[in-house]
Length: 221
Image (cartoon, rainbow, N blue to C red):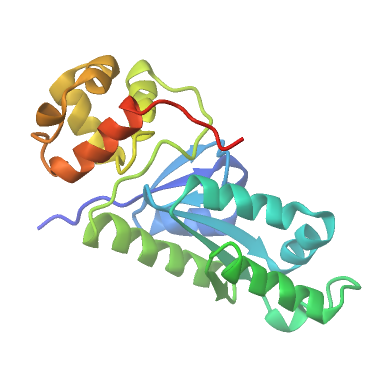
């Protein structure tokens, strides 16, 4: 039986990274894009931010680290950091107090709730990415989300992106809704009883979607 295809969306700046070539050699389909957040998108839930040891420390010093973490958390349900390289060097890269580095690691995990994985080299990283992508796409049947990319989209992709903005609607559900109702406007205007007839949507999700679309906008100011 033919193995289902695994796909990883790779930020175009990672194309020269040898791990991207290694992923391709493993039979993974590589889709290169300019990503708004993260370096590797593995499913509609999972994005990877890859930091080599020196870059992790440098991004802490120049303030990029927590800005990126905020965007990762805002755009994906399950962002992950992979820190690649010799961890014995993490306290030697720059003149940064060891406790400041420890505090940054703790903050990422506790404040931003972003798990951190550690890899020894690009080969180790490639194995991790392939394993996570297989788990998401094959074992858990998750699709790749369009919401992490900034490239020029077709009209159909823009429509899918718009519908994915509804609560509890991922790529597969967005496609199912568009196939049934044909246009985003008809989805937004659909009554509860019609929404819940879409496979895997059901009455509870229909309730949440209709509440979002029907409730009057109120600020907390």
